[in-house]
Image 1: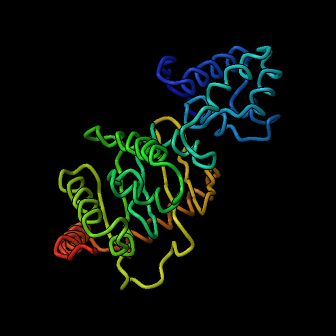
Image 2: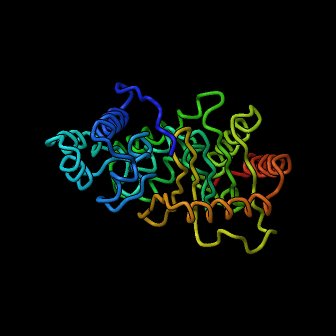
Length: 280
């Protein structure tokens, strides 16, 4: 297994802890597989901890301290990683997303979070939480917009989104909000920041009828897949499962409109929203 690259300890708590884990493991003369065995995890999982693509949980930190003779170092320091702005089921996925080199994402009903505008995100959060104070909605929107900054880089990550036609047609927040949201997707695609395809209704049954999937690739760690449901989600690292979901995404790509035809459809739907009379 390839050794992980040197990490900048100041970049994040996960990077710091991953670097320290690698140094402690090597000092103990253990391979990634040998350290993973008593933890009942794979060597790849240890590599992901060291590369910073997975967050160290306390249950692993306690055992790692015992195995490597590091007293309570990892147990104490993994507490910093437990603080997150995101829901528990999405914490690890958000952390991995931030350092991925490639992200491929399909959602059946919505525009993906990384492509959303503030108005679109606010309309969603208000729907999910109809009675919370406005300040809480604003905080949720700010957190989501902070995530979108990973697309500020001109090249990394490569983001490939397959938008279901339902996401285009479902008027989240009303016509003006939808027109703005679709224009934003068009702008990102036309400036070559993302690749966008639309899975049309005419495609009929498809390989991801069961839900969403997000595939992430990294420079020095194995790929991951995040599958999500209602207030639940799982980050998968099993190679067979990741490969199966990668095939699913490939099948969706084959069933979707070409990028050029997809942008034409998004443009047409955006124009429809712009010409729609606002509801009283």
